[in-house]
Length: 273
Ligand SMILES: Cc1cc2nc3c(=O)[nH]c(=O)nc-3n(C[C@H](O)[C@H](O)[C@H](O)COP(=O)(O)O)c2cc1C
Ligand SMILES: Nc1ncnc2c1ncn2[C@@H]1O[C@H](COP(=O)(O)OP(=O)(O)OP(=O)(O)O)[C@@H](O)[C@H]1O
Image 1 (cartoon, rainbow, N blue to C red):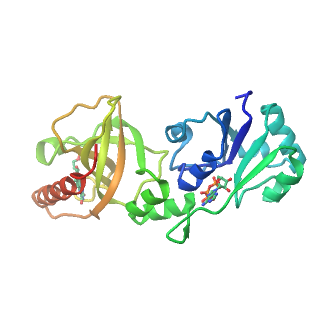
Image 2 (image 1 turned 90 degrees about the vertical axis):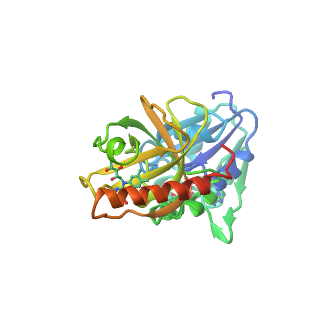
């Protein structure tokens, strides 16, 4: 990283299509500089690394927020002694009270400053907070279009209530607390098990199990056969199927799940897995 000649700077939660435009302006020898606010929940921690081949360093916002424009540039030049190019977006701000913009970067930095124009989709400006809002209303397709990839969460496997396999369908239950949970309900998903390389077609439930014990669960039923998942799974959201619902009996829930499986199978049939 010390050798990097170009950097892109930002929060980069989601690594969405706007962020990707910035990465496209980087050179071979480059680093993505993530400013961690503590709010990243689309691609928390190192999850961002799945969405770029450029190396990433993480800076805590609290460690740099007090810096003046000059101090910020000096800080970057110390970290990247060969720095020639800084890439930021049209709305990038930094320093005390977010007082400095790309114009200040241009004045203060003696190299090239590339400013990426606003990236929009269907006239709507693409931003991480809008992706969060879409996920929270179950608009998976909208969120995925902004992301440029399927919204994916990862977690370690936890044990469920133990009635799924006996009374309903077998599910992998995961705990994925660092990630934003989409709206409660049932989704057509793709699930990756442990270190397998491929994703299985699946149907997943996110929400409080209001029909049974009321506890919160994220669980995935694999559609292409019985599997065993030991440690962790990734769930990639493709489509919203229906809202979470309280059923009067397990039998009714079983019937609803059967329908969910049919819908998910149909939705996922045309996807290249
Ligand atoms: C496709 C699917 C849809 C589900 N829909 C609902 C639902 O609408 N309401 C509900 O209370 N639980 C729903 N569940 C969760 C079940 O209640 C849960 O699988 C069951 O309680 C067994 O949990 P266990 O795996 O922890 O044993 C759904 C589960 C799946 C796999
Ligand atoms: N739609 C966009 N078009 C061009 N540049 C963008 C866009 N969104 C973000 N950027 C740039 O990407 C970098 C990272 O920005 P940031 O992490 O604030 O993303 P964001 O999507 O705007 O997040 P939030 O919604 O939380 O403000 C910044 O340099 C920013 O200017």
